[in-house]
Length: 119
Length: 110
Image (cartoon, rainbow over the protein chains, first blue to last red):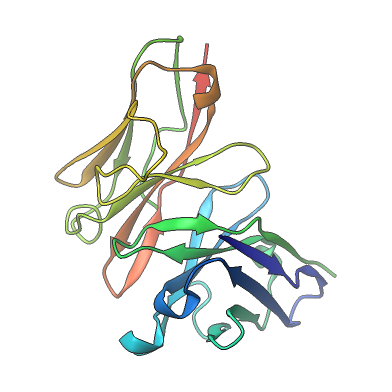
């Protein structure tokens, strides 16, 4: 049972990046999933979540990223995605994908992928 | 949405009990039972310790307990051990179908 993120890297301000999260060992399509980030030396920040298809498959976002970031999923591939657009230096962080249990808690975390936004 | 307020640091000696507070508002902690707590050691992903305010996932020591009163949730660690030294974060459901994390607390075992 694990989540493995990939796709992080160095990108210029205003640029875009797509992060991926590969799920394995559990019925991914049944679960709601989320993204959380952590800037260097700072605390955790919730970014957004996506429901499973049965519950509509829609996503909700935190105010700082709404309109710039998009969460999607491909249940046939057991993959979760985070599209980051119009990136700002303050988006520099480690990005974690998580599985949400039925009580809105993140009971499984990936190891994280680092995104650095710098010119 | 402002972060929930936690003390920056809490310390205790081995064997002692410590409590970490997590203060929010009537729009988050005060309105929802779904408060969770996470432990994070340096360079490692967070680990779920408490969910739905007071429930422990399988495998988490019963030395960890959670509670809530009004707009404040609390995490208590009893019988403090060296391995408990880590950062701890609370998280709550919030209005508009969002979540909010706490500011984080560094626990030091003296």
